[in-house]
Image (cartoon, rainbow, N blue to C red; front, side, top):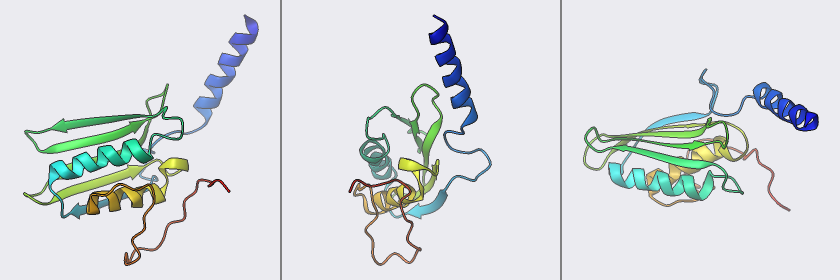
Amino acid sequence: MYRNLVAASALALGLAGCSLGISQDSASPHSEFKAPVAFKDAYATVIRQSNNCLRSTDNAYRVIPELNEGAQTAVVRVLAPYTDNEMSRVDLKAAGDKSTDVRIVMWGKGTWDAAAMRAMQDAIYYSITSCSTYMPLDPRPPVKPSRDLPK
């Protein structure tokens, strides 16, 4: 009994000590742009991209889409298990028939790093999901993924 109590206390202290999720002080990687894509197409792509690339290898993270058709706005969030901290957030707003205002925010570490943010941008812009960005003509500087890849 005491061993379980000590283990639970240590876990709680460990989780409290590390910052998990999007930072409230705008330190997390973020991007804002206008995509030449219809709002509903952008929304569907963000859901697919989040499910395919941002749920982690064990799929423990949840993708929560929220659509307001009347206001033509949407939010797609990826939440951490147990804490429900936001790991990624994409806000969408229709800006015409074939244009969508997009704001992407990622945690900044692991699966949710700046490279994942760039992959989400490309997924929305080109309506093709991919966990990496492959656009060679992109003038933005390349972002190296922070996660270790298998050898």
